[in-house]
Image 1 (cartoon, rainbow, N blue to C red):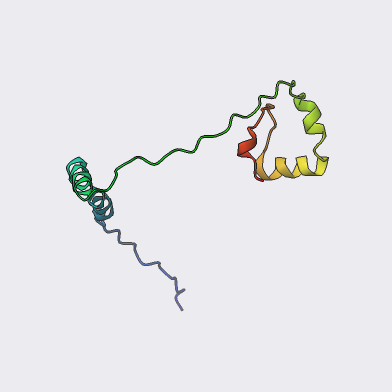
Image 2: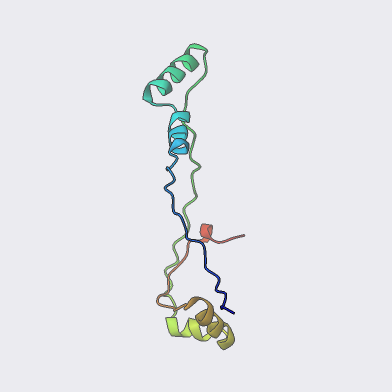
Amino acid sequence: MEPVTASAPEEVLETVPVDTAPEAAAAASWPDETGESAFRAEALERGEAMTAAKVPVEANEETITAPLPALDDLVKRIPSHVRDTLDDLFRARFVTVRRVPERALKK
């Protein structure tokens, strides 16, 4: 008896053309300068006010001038098992202390 060997079928690679239609469609769906100008002119003829959206004014935050704590003091406040987990999962390293604006924090 002859030993039976399984042979894998040869892979045939074929070239697939890259479809650039989504990029072209995205570019075509947004008006160019002439289309935008025509739209604005028509809106003005209809009596619509064409004003830019107002940006909300943020209240000035009071500047805290107290010195920041030392990095080592802050790291010591984190439980050791949490620091170990952070290091294992993310290779996290604490390198600096920065003040974060209050508006960046969740309420």
